[in-house]
Amino acid sequence: MRLAFYAPLKPPDHPVPSGDRRMAQLLMAALAARGHEVELASRLRSRDGAGNPARQMRLAAVAGRLAQRLVRRLLARPAAERPRAWITYHLYYKAPDWLGPRVAGALAIPYVVVEASLAAKRAGGPWSTGHAATAAALARAAAVVSFHARDEEALREAVAQPARLHRLKPFLDAAPFAAAARARDAHRRALAGRHAIDAGAPWLLAVAMMRGGDKLDSYRLLARALARLEGRPWRLLVAGDGPARAEVEAAFAPLGARVAFLGAQAPEALAALYAASDLFAWPAIREAWGMALLEAHAAALPAVAGDSGGVGEILQHGRTGWLVSTGDDGAFAAALAEALDDPARLRARGTAAWAKVAAEHDLAAAGVALDRILAAARGAA
Image 1: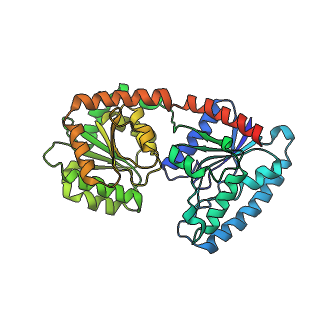
Image 2: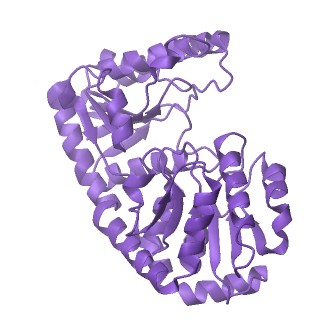
């Protein structure tokens, strides 16, 4: 089936890496693996981070004109070459979808949303335009797919019929991470030599963009938690970069040489980094669910993470890691200490993390689930 794909927050070929971009890429890959022809319908970014109503109206007007052009172009194709469904990934009040509902309606094809959030408190205020557009898109959708229960609960009233709500577990292509895990010792030796890191000490790993807001808050909490563990021989490896790098480095400055900043990493380098480490550590303040956490588990790396959003649906407390109350640096430090003090349990939870990803979160299983959702959407449209 030919499918039109759109990600209003960030297109899948955007140059700046992020979990959002990665999931858009994975959705396209999962659909392609099932034999679908997936075309990127538009690279228009609808995000308004500042809450500027005038900007939102301008974006809506631009999207309206673009939608008209898309409809003309797609209708000019032979019927067999037109998309038979439209899929929009990740819309919310700051990045609504002004394209998909219009184009899908004009082509009389199902409109499908994967990952959305809707907060009633945004119905008024500076993002009211984006909120209204998101609510209208969800009401129009033949299928709305959420990655975790908390989002699904918030979406129930916005979706036209309960049967149009679907769940899809976050997923990735687990094979490269499993391969990296099998070569763990070689990766650890190579990284220790390249970055002058003590291979005998436990390695903690944080992987995240360095930007203001929730990411910076998470980095700062991690630094405060680690400051409580100076008596233990840990090392922290940080993979990531961004506009808040100076603030992130300042937060960890009191910890000195125990923290190694590795910068942004290519996907293959990240897989090796996960596999070589002993524990993934991320406070996950206001995190939706966390692609980096899923990647860590795929490489048999257990985690200590904050219990935010859908994090608890990936990390199983007591089985694949330690889940901690969000924002509590004392509790986070205690969980890190417990993990570091029991290497055998740490390894066992890493094995369980890999097994959970292989059984529940691999790309092939997601492709099968997406096929079922598309079939239901075509029946509902």
